[in-house]
Image 1 (cartoon, helix red, strand yellow):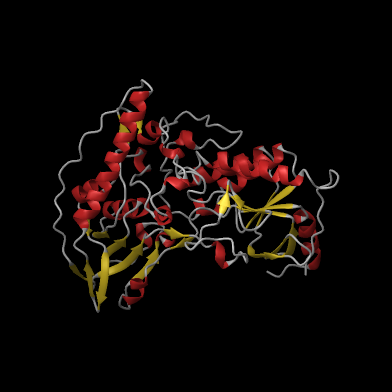
Image 2: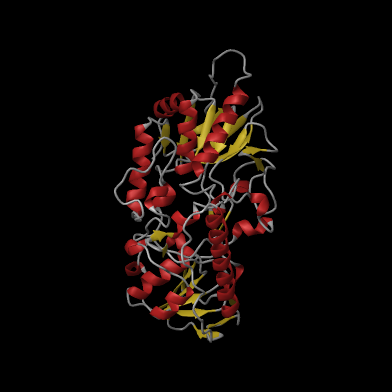
Length: 431
């Protein structure tokens, strides 16, 4: 629908603010909370609706960390099921209530197409409602931006539907036939389980992913981990920058939460394969590395066990029991005939997408923003929050984003304290 000039002028008044936060997920909302507390005039623009990324997850999705981790700034968890796992729609409602409670200045339906240098200084945001100038921009567009689909995806034969995890909703919407899931992080495991339970024959092309039991001695694994420094692991501690792209812990919150990893999937009847290496006509070939992938996950399990044992013991706390992993038998086929497959679902992770629309050389070779405590080290006035592993392992999580958001908000306050007078006004131009 075409906007009238009157509507555009009305929107202009709403967006006339010196600080623009882009994105109304948990990061954008947490930053807004911090700015409100510091009395900083700002506006949060969201391309669709509050919590849009959560809304786009498949129908049966449940929070993968326990409910108590929904502890955004100023709003600790107060429900009666702290170690449960709420469904997708309840997560969205939680974020909506959070925004409403604090009266956050959110403008939904405003898509930011690009952020560019403004001729007069500051930033020019090209948006779906016209151009906006800002002195400060905080980019909070989520940790999972562009689904990664390897080049081999283009080699599948016609007639086989190819989709990404973000396109999957439920088994009933898929065409008939066997299903190949490529990628075995959280999404790949959860979708494979659901499809198998729906009576589909599922093949899972596996890669390297960590795993851990859902519960230990009656407590959730995340609850145990938060008593250690694991989630506070800083970016500099990673073995390489590419480690930020590694898979998340294999787990699920569906059906009350339960173990979900290579052993449980194999036991239920999902056909595990090595990673996808080739397509020749209607034949798909897979590497002989399934055992190696399982061994990688087992090594990460032992790493977590070591952290729990050492740090909890040092604090005089109870240490949960973590037995050695059970034996795993790996003898997968190296080729699969695709003739009776109806769909291939790529769950191969996500990549940053900032450089596509932010017109500043502010990103590393992998596309992650170059930051120091959320502030761009290249562009003054440009901030980020909610980036995967921006400062720590927990930077993009509900349980951790508030810490980063507070740092960003205070940095903006310090930067603006040197401005002449108390005014935070801004002249915005449209069209």
